[in-house]
Structure formats: C-alpha cells, structure tokens
Amino acid sequence: MNQETEKRRYLVTGASGYVGGRLVRALLDDHQLVRVFVRDKGKIQGQPWANQVEILEGNANNLEDLKRALAGIHTAYYLLHSINLGPDFDEIEAQMARNFAMAAKNQNVQQIIYLGGIANDKKTSKHLASRARTGEQLATQGVAVMELRAGIVIGSGSASFEMLRHLTHRLPIMTTPKWVMNRTQPISIRDVLWYLRKSAELTTPVNKVFDIGGPEVLTYAGMMQKFAKISGLPKRWIIKVPVLTPELSSLWIGLVTPVPTALARPLVGSLISEVVADPKKSIDALIPPPPEGLLNVERAIELALSKISQHTVETRWSDAGIVTAPWQKAQGDPDWSGEMLLRDKREILTQLPAAHVWKQIESIGGENGWYGAGWLWFLRGLLDRLVGGVGLRRGRRDPDHLRVGESLDFWRVEALESEKLLRLYAEMVLPGKAWLEFRLNEVDGKTQITQEATFAPHGLGGQLYWYAVLPFHAFIFPTMLRNIVKEASRQMKKQK
Image (cartoon, one colour):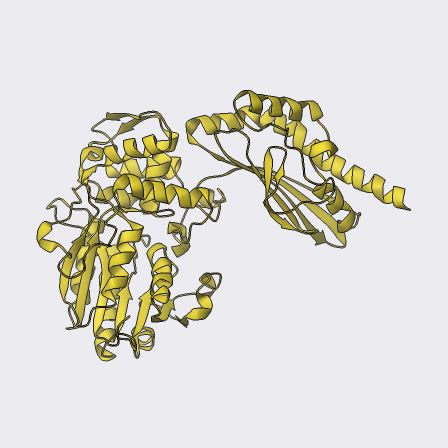
C-alpha cells in the first residue's frame, strides 16, 4: 500500500457472498481500511475477519441506506446480484445499480469497481445482458466505474466449479446440449482476487471496461474431461443432443448437483454464448498479471480440489443465501463444500448422566470394539485391506481417551468436545467421504444421544454404494446406540 492510498476507506458490498467474503480478507491482508455493507450482519459474524472491519447493515434497494454505507468511502466494490429474485431480476438489478450510483455521487465516491460477466457474443443470455446493463447503470451519474468482466470462475465453493465438479463426478455418461462445445475462458478465483485487490491501489480513478480471463480457451466439455483426469476418473462419455434447452438443463443440474435450479438457470444461460475475453479489452497495461503468471485450468482445478480435501474452503456460493427449494435445503450440505450428503440419523433418550455415556463413546473402537455386530465390522475392515485400505489394524492409541487428529481403526478423530461431540472421518477405501458423529445434549433433565452417519458420494458409484449398505446400517447403527446405553448403565451400576 503506497502513501496515496493508505488513508482510503473501501466499501465491499456482497461481503457475505462467494467473492465478497474472500475480497474482504484480501484487502485486510493488504492493510486496507474496510467497511462492509450487508443486509444481515449475523451472516458474517462467523467470519475470521468480522472484528477487523466496520459493519453496516442496510437494504441495497434503499437510497438512504446506501448513502450511509458510502459516506467517507473512496472506492466501492459493487458485488451485488439479484438473479434468484424471479423473472424480473434484470429490472431489479438495474434499479439497484442506479440507486448505488446516485448514492455514490451524493457521497463523493471517487471509484466504483464492479465485477461483471464477459458479454462479447451477440447471442448472449438474459443473465449476461443484465450484468452488462448493471455496469451501464452504475456509470450514469458520473462516478468512475472500473468494470471487470469475467467468465467461469474456478475455485473451491464457487457455483460454477460445484456444477462442473458434480456433473463430472456423478455422470460417467452424459447426454448434453450442444452448448458444451462452446468456447469459454475460465479464470481462477485467485486471479480474480488479484485484479480486484490491485484495482484498489490505482492512484487515479479509472472509467473503463476490462475483460479478465485465464490463459486458456477451451470448451466446457474440455473442462469436464480435464476435471475427470485430475480427479482420477475415467474419461467421460459426452453425447450431444439438440433437445436439451437451457431450461431443461438447469432442471437436470438442480437434480444432479447441489446447485439449485434457480442458480443453475443463469449459469447455464451464460454458456449458450461463447464467453471469451476480448483482447481489445485487456487489463494488462493497467494491472499486469501476477508475478507467477495466471493459473491454467488444470492448476486452478487442482488448487480448488486441494482446498476441498483439506476442509479449508473460505466461502461458498450458498453463503449469499440463495433461495432454494425445501428438498434442496434438506440435503444438509456440509460447511466446506456445498455437496449433497446422505445421512443415517438415530436418537435415544436415557436417564443416565452425560458423563457416563460419554465415557463409552470415547472408548469406542480398537480392542473395545464397536458395541455389537463385531463380525460385520471385521468383514468391512478385511474388505478394506483387500482393496488397499488401512482396515481395522491401526486400533487406538489409548483405550479410554481420544485426541483430535489421531487414528482410530479406519477412522480419524476430526472433532472432539468432551461430553458433547465426537466426529470421526473415515479413512477406509470408499467411493466418497464418510463421517460418524455422536452428540450429547440435555433434554428435560435426560441425556439425548444423537448418532449420525454421513456420506458424500463420489459419482454414481458412490450413491449406489450407499444404498447397497443401507440394510447393514439398519442392523449396525441401532444396535450400536442401544449397546452404548447398556454398557454405560452397566458401568454405572458397577461403580456403586
């Protein structure tokens, strides 16, 4: 940060969203003064940067709220979208942009930075047309608008990436519309943030439209094949058919992936045209690429997948509060990825104190066993070893106590709160990811034990696996829960 920019204050709208949440952290890393404008500050209180920014609540459609938010601001980031608000979302977005421009002029804001979408093809979607119109409306009041237009953003947790990831994982054979052969120029979220944060350091206001894209131009089908290769999946069979309209495609995506139809529709609509950066709108002369260069598609995918596997995803597309159908809400997407989960949940109430129940839960596995159905656990461990897994041979470090991060048979302790929570992550060979969790709560003076098995399937095979083992779950998990209570009761009586 140079002397000319060190006293500036920056406003970030859409801070609870995918890009906005990451941009706030990036600006703070650059030691900038940041204010965020949100509808509900409760949605960002869990962010690690929440105590480092000024938070202002308000409605983006309210001119007075916008004036309060923009007071004393030098540069404002406009990251607002309304694509989930019905068929008239384009009119809503245009009005929001006009209001924002008027409030910015009223408060003498010097620069608006807007992240839009590449729209150079004559055959563009309603979504991309609305993005372009938003930029035009922001510029109506004379405040300088620096518009950065991007295509598909590849990053852990982005809606575009989740759509790509789940379609590729779950469908080894796909009948697809012809738009999968249209050219696109994706860009990594890391590079999007590079341009956004460097825009904050410009010494004079800029009033211009720039296209930002990664170093590769390829088809959507090509991206899917790259993703499959990186993920260790066989080559996907892609069969193009003319009958799959964007509307039908979005319905299918809403069914197969965690991205809801309401959000899939504009994403698919954007793919009906070629989304390729125009060299005449290059930003390189103003903001050069990162010193290490822009990430290519393969490296961007690898980085996104590593974030997911390490559970270090910062923000997700769903953070912005996309309106979804009740059945999509019921999927219970995990905090780190947004993907569909399959669950087996059991509960039981007991008069036993939580401390006695917890002792049995914490001593599970190893030589102590898994509270019944021992032969099934043995067979599962044997099968895991036959396919190259760890099996049950690792046992446990201590017969009575666990520590976060240590191995426990073919599990690893992921979370531990004494007398409250034990969550185990499966390290057996599986077509997906699995967890086993125990929670204790007090209900009307009794101890409620909740036992939940959770599975995130990897492709169609993962889903078939889950349903194949359900009959065994119906025997193993109720037995385990009952025997935990029985053993806790037996140990309690033994102590008296």
